[in-house]
Length: 432
Image (cartoon, rainbow, N blue to C red):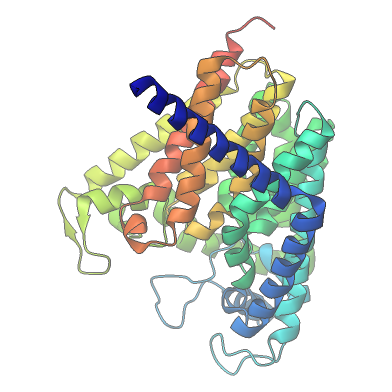
């Protein structure tokens, strides 16, 4: 009798799995998937126009200040906290989108709709290009497998991608430059790869981690190209546009106001960020040892000690990532190898807002493609499936404030990163 009950339960479970697969196949079919994505794109465009480009105004504020030959890092509302934190060269990328009236005051732009819609189309184009390039460089057993896995990955990341779009954010643009840099690197076009990576860094400086990935993979040959790319994007082109003296002035101000407080400091209180929206390592560690979200803060341990903890963990993450790709990467591990370094700009910056996790469709695709190979070790397959499920779960955890307050997104992503690193290290020990 007990055996019959167990068999019925197994049958019910099999039927449930079969129904899920059938529903999944229906959603992933072109007749359903394409209309869903089209509706989401149109809806996001409408919402973006209604919201009025709140985050885009920050970038345009920087452009406006640069045009007036002032420092874009001067914050009229808080002298100690720059709102525009991008590299000066980023204003050149944003200048074509200044399709609005000159502001009457800080962030008081008029007639923003043309700028907002133009930026939305540019980011959508960048996202499409990212997908196109990923399909060219991401290994899998077949193109059909890649397409199916890509659909799954996009659906997983849609809420985060949508939030990035409707807020007129720019991290998807940074991702597009980074993916293009990876593509060009794999095509042995190192200088152009370095230029694209430098463009990504102007938008989001933590994409610098990919330079380390390229240097390790090229056995140091990428260093010269990277230096030339940085000089071209950060100094030569901006100096031609803004003038040498002014570009040097804003570069120095950017370093002093935005980079130095994090990189050249000995205390956590110079870069702490405890808003629920920030899910990076410093915020996650800060929530353990600091009480409160805004000043005055109460430190459970000295901020200097918190700083050391963060630096040690950051160094561990970085060195483990470097060790994971130090040996020659097998072709089918390529997606997992660069995904490992695409996770570092989420985990380690002084702060990283949760909607930057829109990037997760890239490591999701890498893992799904890798799992599509039939000869994957069983234990390895199990760990990767668990890590994948964890990443999907934490990507939706942002909708619940309590989960943000305890940094669920960070800790889950750190676990996912750890499994990828372990997989790479274990695979490197196998004979080719």
